[in-house]
Length: 224
Image (tube, rainbow, N blue to C red; front, side):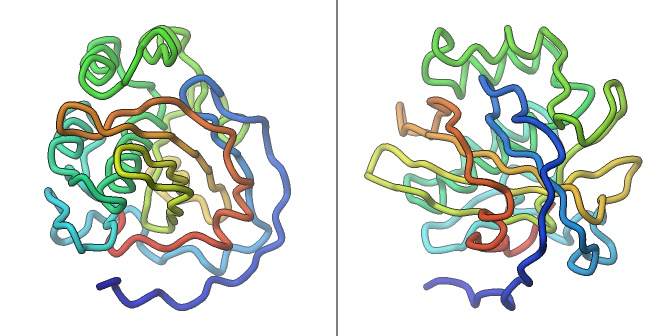
């Protein structure tokens, strides 16, 4: 059974704020809204009980693997995510939470995640791309400024699903100096493959516009 849907989100006017983020590894659309009324009052608080598993019929929580943002989290999410559409969404979301931040993941983290969770590094060079120390917020956060992303205001959309492949869109908020920005949002679309008993990142896709994703997407049941 699907969880009860959240109240409909208002349609915000959106203004483009920057180019796509490191298209090779994220292909994220970066936008911000002109309204702050939809921001939660306490967006950076950790959920009371972060999920470490995703039973088959549970809606995506946005917190699979826990609320950390390290390689251990994303690999725990990969291990826990079931061979279902919701499992694909949970893993893709954990991957986006791990990747989209500054400082970017260390070489050791990138190597661990690439080895365990990327289908073909020759087509998706995670380690090489992160070695360039990219600004994965695009133009939303200045170069060198710390930030990370949160699924508290986030949404997801299952673009397609066929047994061993899934295409998932993930929309997240941007946290700067410990506070969720009331307007900045990032959208990412990933294609996943089920291989060896787990979901893997196959490649990044051209994403929906963030305005569109936040209009059609479904909110997470928890958020981290």
